[in-house]
Amino acid sequence: MILVWGPQTDAPIERVLEALEMRGADVFHIDESDLESLRYDIVFGADCRGWIESRGRQVAIENFRGIYIRPGKPLSGAARKASMVLLAMVSQAQAVLINHPAAGGSNSSKPYQLGLIAQAGFAIPDTLVTTDPVAARDFLREHKRIIYKSVSGIRSIVASLEMKDEARLEDVRSGPVQLQEYVEGLDVRVHVVGTRWFACSVRSSSTDYRHADTMPELCEFDLPENIGERVRALVQSMNLLVAGVDLRVKADESWVCFEVNPSPGFTWYEESTSHQIGEAIVDLLLTNS
Image (tube, rainbow, N blue to C red; front, side, top):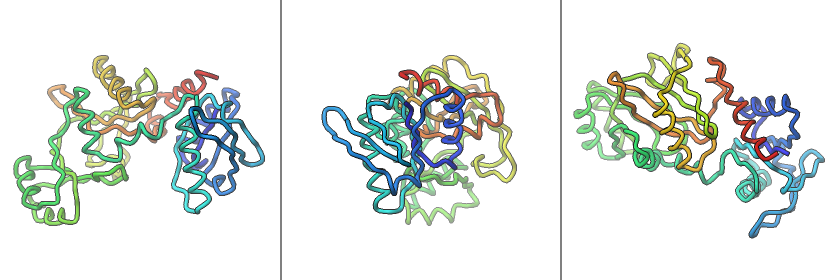
């Protein structure tokens, strides 16, 4: 049996559920709206045993052979409590888990994750995290053009600053803010699923193509084998089975890695390519079934 936890309205959850249904898999889906009334009796110890019940269906924990989670943020007390119990349960379940909650922890600190990326052998952009306007201005003068983004894993819009914007750096006092050198090149998003990878180039006139005024041009990209292996090894070193890795290839064919998303919204990339990322995820979930 496969456990899927996340909102039905979430595109990756919808895609995985659809693929599982096409395979005839036995699925136990927990929508965020189910958390308020979720029933459970779980014993935590050397192993995890017990049951959970939703919509009148009760399932023993040991029956779950694959688990895919993209939980939202429950608002009520009962839903929050159920969410915490489920996180503890999936963390101890003897199943293929995409992804272990602890494995995605590095995404909560972008500077820390950059350190892991560098340790894996990838070039990273010159980075400054600061609340000091003087240091920020010096960083801008050194690089002439920089970008700024959230330090945490909270999604933010990436924007750029040039020398004419120098006065705005007074605002870093309210930070901390992460500043990075602007790297010229072609954006490449690589989705890693187990030992497989799916590369997609992204062309956009916007600094943050996710929020561009016009639809970016997404195309399948022939990723060099050695880069694909390094990306796969990076994801594996973070104990992730599935991840979205953001890179940029420069004019001299050197590569820079920006970050690793442990819960990627892959469907947007699927829609513009022939990549079957959802099917690959289901292949992993059904490995032990």
